[in-house]
Image (cartoon, rainbow, N blue to C red; front, side, top):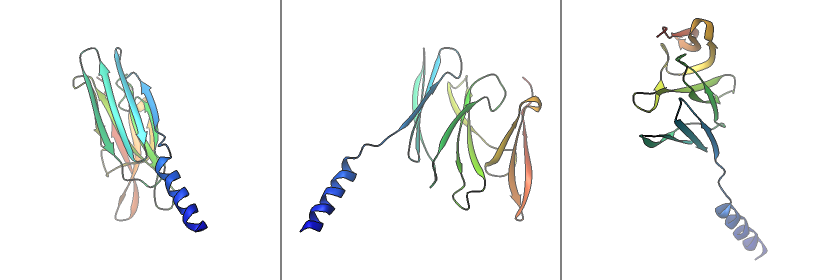
Length: 151
């Protein structure tokens, strides 16, 4: 009987435990506000401007904790964001998904690397307007260079 009481108490605690969401708000450009709400492996992106309001949810397949990073990833002078994690395997590298703000669409678009599927071990070289990452070819690690030309 004591065990049942303990089990029911623990289950009710789990069902009523609050879900903590991490929220980040920033301005990609003037008069535009972006709010990112990270809840577990789900990210809700909301963009509000004087003329437009939109919200989307992005699912991530990750066992490890997700992190949000605000930066100008395509070197256009506009704030973008990335969601990154330590890999789910041995935990030896980072995986970034990058989302760049598109003023004409008034929303973010996911950026893909010039080679490979993900931005693995991302390095930013601002002076060269380049994102460096790792990809594998025949189980051999290679350097991927994603270059952005000046506007």
